[in-house]
Figure 1 (cartoon, rainbow, N blue to C red):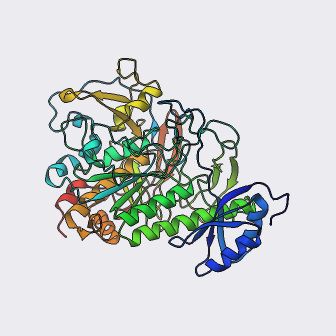
Figure 2 (cartoon, rainbow, N blue to C red):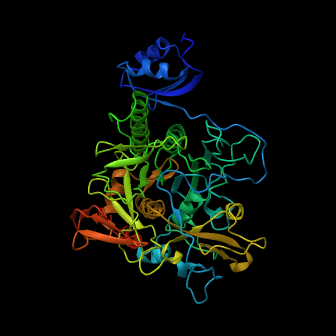
Length: 534
């Protein structure tokens, strides 16, 4: 048994080397811990043990490749009906950023062909989705998994395509973190586990809407308005995405026959996961190795079962092939951050994991967005993500418009008592007597779902009958995405100077027109995907 100085028991994910399961189980017991369960699909043990002493003992065993705490799930305090997280904006990952400037909202635009707010969707015009919608809208036989903060399945512009029966929530709200500071805020339900058709943050709803808002004469249309949307929630209300829910989400997506998943986040608490960084403690190194190993195994499991994997690249304006400093990790609990040197051996997960298609963001002009990460090795595709600061001044209309949960807008003070938007970033559309809300956001989080929607079109066209409806090998989807992308060359000169709010930032693009660090293989093209021959 563990000694008295070992600390209280916590749950840990212990990843074992290939073929070393028995040895790892023995190591857990030898270190004074006990087994809770074993996941043979992904090669890890969920074990309980006594704090740092337990981790140190496991880290010395050759059968163990990584160890990290299984973040304590939420617990019920005093539930507050309708209460939301007071943690504010999403705290981590490659999330869309709010742009609280520019023009007040207007009602549904007149003279617009298509959905009422189609005139605001410059992004769909850029990639030809407005035309593709009519020719190849996608089919209900295609399942798109949204691994995010949830989906507002009751939103009028999502509900027709939302598959509630298959949707799952793999997180439980946690009102406060280990330091007693607000994390997710008061629970909305007694169990602290939100229903599968709720999104108390709004990020996942925006992503889902971009992928597949239907053609229903309400609001907007997504890239693939005919597909099914499955909420596979892995993100906390506060915006943190921890390892275990991400593993569960990917495994579940694979097992039910999901065709493509969108991952607009990174796995907390490390922006860059370094397996052997001398600036990190042994415990921190083991944690990062666990994230690298565990996510790669989950991604491989999903891809081998036919799931195409698409991720946002990141919002750090960073060349991911030449990262130098990480000052935001570990990002949980808040306040634990430190500044450390990093290099190209350190990975942003899942964007830099193997088998993942990573997407950078462009603004309305087609220029790589100033905030978007880039990299010749890391960037596979580009897509509209918005750039409110592109051009003179700042305008929300240069961002991406998609569905937003009314409850989130009310809780954050963006609507008045009558429901009228108070923020320039919010749009209310009441076409046909049904009112629904939309929000302008920027980010590679917004770019990735455009690529996911295009992938869904390709699977709808070329997929064969399989589990869940249709199936198409991820390698084939990837090949078709690259084949149909609109090639973009690096700017000339290659080092581009961004001027954002009075500050200059130089970013250098490497590579040729067929593949480069700013645009990858090019900007996704829904029209080409709808018309390309096999």
